Length: 75
Image (cartoon, rainbow, N blue to C red; front, side):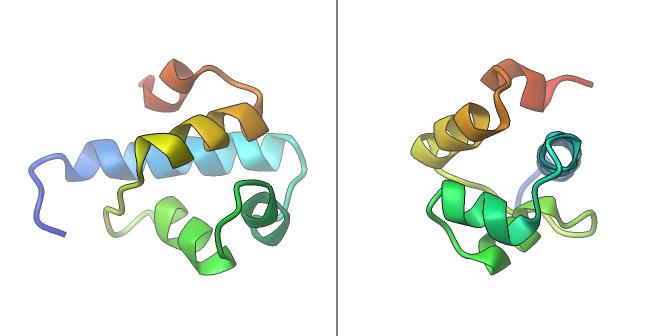
């Protein structure tokens, strides 16, 4: 993915991972709840490569993690 916002994508993925683990959820369980594959979640959470998502999925992620969307983008 060619983007100038690599750090923001990585930070977003690490936030998703943080809140997912805080809830004690595996990647597989989380993927089921957001109606995506395990590999999709692994790509989002990867600390080495940027991977984006749609707004629809972003809202599902926020809902499942029980945090406002803004929390997923905080420093």
